Image 1 (tube, rainbow, N blue to C red):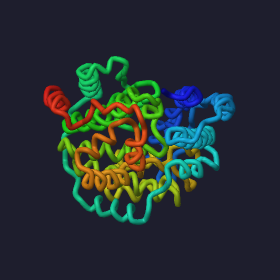
Image 2: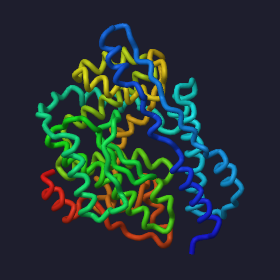
Image 3: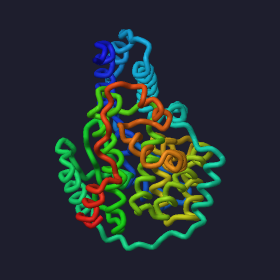
Image 4: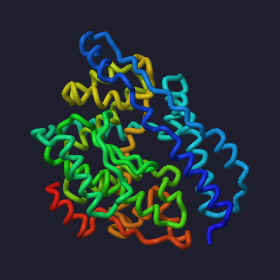
Length: 365
């Protein structure tokens, strides 16, 4: 039976999670700044953001009054609270001098070794693919897959945003970038990445006795993104273009911490077309107003870093290790703790099941 204070603490954490406005990270004026950027080689984007007061300060004060006993779950809950405090501070500092500091505190930054690996990946020639799949077609496929797995409380939508697709677990929303076209191979990859990883892990986590398995254990994100890329590889839909994009993100974050948008863009142009180089640079520089200055939203390096870390784990642990990572939104460091936590339910949804592969085949992904 879950201790009363633990349950109360988790409920407050869930409220905090829902109130943190992560989508406020995206600039409001990317289109106009893109036009200005390409008209004048001396211009750097100046981004604007909508204000999203989180209103979580009262919840922080309330949750700090709760006394927890010493055990594995409660330690994880306290660690999660500290992460939420830093995340809120980062969101509230968007456009400010402290934004990059909080981003590095939460996500870290790429190592020199990872940067070296990224450049090695970029030496590979990209695969040329015709882009003839519309946002609406991706939307229809995602909606069908959600229905096939009876994930009736998840809603698929189209949204103007920098990313091709995104999952907002706290609101059970799956977004596809609107007014875009994608290669045929994107269909399978987006289903595996967004639903087969992010939605499956959150849904499995929701069935656990502890809500933190749905909202995410502390420092789960690197594993989450790395697992998504490995799931693509296991389902034979990981393309060199995807790895090149993740490598480009590592370079963008690495350089953004040292220099301005224009210099980051010019380096990326050595490996990508103008459209892709712009998009990758925007992802690294979002959160800043004056992008001519050094600074970054450092999250994007985790995709490639996580890919290598999870790949090593799966090579050692095999299919059993994969299923362990689907108990919920957990990190690699939490895998050994699963045995210590009573009452956990074995995961039902994994991206290597017979049903999952049948669904992929059925939707033509």
